[in-house]
Each structure stands twice: as structure tokens, then as C-alpha cells.
Image 1 (cartoon, rainbow, N blue to C red):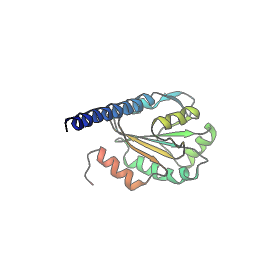
Image 2: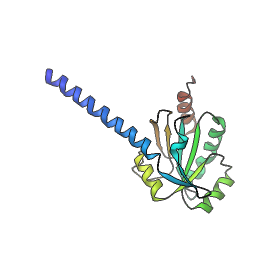
Image 3: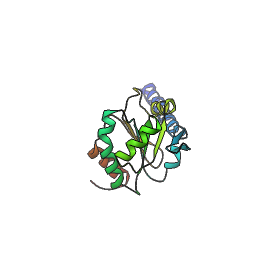
Image 4: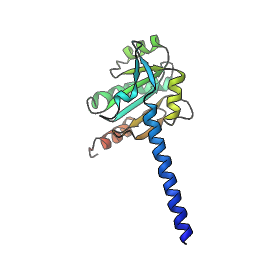
Length: 167
């Protein structure tokens, strides 16, 4: 009986250490420099901490990404000033700029290739597929990892919860 209790304590401690290391990894990952549409290096960490952060990984050639973008634009407009949205395009600058204009994307867009794919993996996308969306709370905890199209109702519920709104 005593050994079972000790085993459970050690297991719980190991899980806590593992969880803490995962959150630390997410925080460090946000320091990966990616270029903006003007070619200037930017870090996702500059957007974290003050407000919940929604990071959407996408590409202009990705069909589901094209389908979800109008929903993300509407969500960003609804939560403007309360939640920070950032798009990370795994693509070339010209098609990304055209895409952003076509879909009237107003939130920041950063560009990446292998560095962005590595960042996606660090944030929990082991499949390397698009679209992939991560929600990070103000403490730097990854609270949502969503592979596939964003579901607006679920995203609203998550964001409202982070903002302390009752649904």
C-alpha cells in the first residue's frame, strides 16, 4: 500500500515536470524569428502575454485554409483589442500578400518555411499538416491545438472562456 502511494506521487511529479517542460518549450518556440510581409524579422513572442494569442498556420494553396480564413477574419474583428490573432503562412511572399488582400486579412501575417514547420511541430502539430491553429493564454500556456479548419463556435467558446465571459 505504501509503495503504491509513493509510485503515484513519483508519477504525478514526473507528469508535472513533463507538463512544465512542454509549456516552457512553447514559450521558447515563440522566439523563433519569422519575416513579416515587408521582410522584417518578427517574433511571435512580441504578441504574447498581454492578451490571448491565436496563431493560425496556413498557406495560400491550401483549400481548407482558404475556407477558414473568412471565419478567422470575422473572429479577429469580433475580438479586436481583446485577443491577438497572427497568421503564419508557409508560403512565398507574393501569393501571401495577394491572399491577404483578397480575404481582407487585417491581423499580422508572418512568413516561414522550414522554420515555421519546425515551430508547428514544437507547438504540437506532429503531422505537419495545414491548417493548424494554436490558442495560447496570457500565461503562455497552449490551451488549444487544432489541426484542420477552425470551428468558429468552438473558438468563440474558448476565447470567451479565456476572457472570463459566461456563455
